[in-house]
Length: 81
Image (cartoon, rainbow, N blue to C red; front, side, top):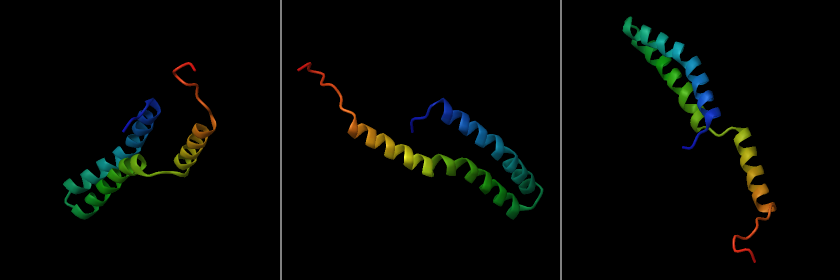
């Protein structure tokens, strides 16, 4: 999956919010409350995974505009004819 600097910054921000949830889940898990610990670890994992693979309305609009612009704009031939 190709990603740029903005994708990397977005992932870092997501991890910034997911890390405390994961640490709380690990603390609960090690403290003996396995069910709640696993729930919080699962929530933290979903916080990181879902934005990476879920298509948002912004993604759909961007793809539509890119496809339309690609069909409307003519490119020059490489042959020079």
